[in-house]
Length: 311
Length: 311
Image (cartoon, rainbow over all chains, first blue to last red):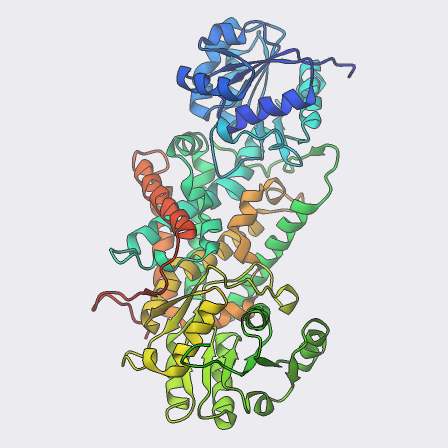
């Protein structure tokens, strides 16, 4: 038992892959904790066959009495839900989200929760090719980084509810990493959103080239499947990401198109070797990051003046 | 025992991942067959610790007496080796290669082997993230397509040595697919070489954005690892691919850069939904292709007039 205590009742708003995996992980990590799930009625009906959680079709009833409110929804839907949560939740509750962009969400939450519950932006760097609670995995967060957003005034990290949540993240095997929202959104645009959106574009090129004979797609190797994993992502999730991190993503995509053009014009020249040397280095670094033992807690932040803002 | 007989002595020129895996697969499939490996002396020295194959530091001795000569080398090195092979090999031998581009190789081979051994271009659509005989896998080709190149005069498919090789491919679990060299090179540029080179470019963007604090690369998820798998590829292999399939690759990279630019300028518009719908379709098709039962032998070829030539 920690000195900051433990959450007793957790409302999970949105029980897709992330929400349901978080719930499953909590059940394993904290015996005494009760979970209430909020989602569309048809989702909750199916959910009850798999999880022994309380379910709630009404937001007010779901958040009332909860000391942790976990939003696992597309960013736009989560932002829209904030006023409804604020109107009904306990003043001592911690409200957190799991969205892929943080600046807009944290700004919206700062307004809504000004003198009410504590809000903490979060982003688990975890996911799978599949979606839906049917694929929920209590081990989804184990060994994965989980970004938590500091509010810039240094108060977050000392709030007991925040400490409690960070301990909970460790309890489910995640590695909490502190960042500010702007740095997070810049970084995610570069290492996640740009590459995934570029894969969408590559998939489109292959689709346009493929004719009624099935060529060239029919000659694709399994490597293409790895490369185009994101091409199976639902539009609904990406619409919100693109809407809320537009400038960072646009800038990274612009650099990507330029880098591809550079490669194209140097296919038969010695510069190609430099390109591969640089790419090989990134690849090695990624492999090391994947397999490196993690520090107990990591602080990240761009040196002052280097963070790229999104608006 | 097949009516077209079996190869008895196979010279494998280049015992990297593909060459050594082919040898290992042959050993499992054909008991009576003997294998001689040709490579640099230091590679052969280490190879002997793992495989009980005859080794040969001298090309002439390696190919002499072999009825199948299997080149598993970068395309450029393989083309350079053709005259040496032609000067020493048996007139009844089948010479084949495993290179990733076929037009240049097949043209060069047609000249060199005009009235000598039979040449058959080949390309196993198989590979792994790792290289070297240390990772050789007798099952590498199982369930994978293996493109064999028809010479356009329809004679290849009836040659007994070619039939023998196609049967051997089936014996090691591969699915032979006939194509002409130009169609192969166009298709591979679109579904393999363009996406992999684009990944190199994306990795470069991430490298350039990453600073001394390790951001943003330190926040990359495992998805990026999948996406950038090719970024670990050695330059030596790609130099030859880019040199021998330049126009097809350049054209595909140009389309990729344009597709990324289109996405960039439509991040917040409804067109994004169309892009995802198209990409989702490609993704589903690839998944189905990966898991579909294969026909015994597949014929591929673009309708007349649609094949894109590379020179």
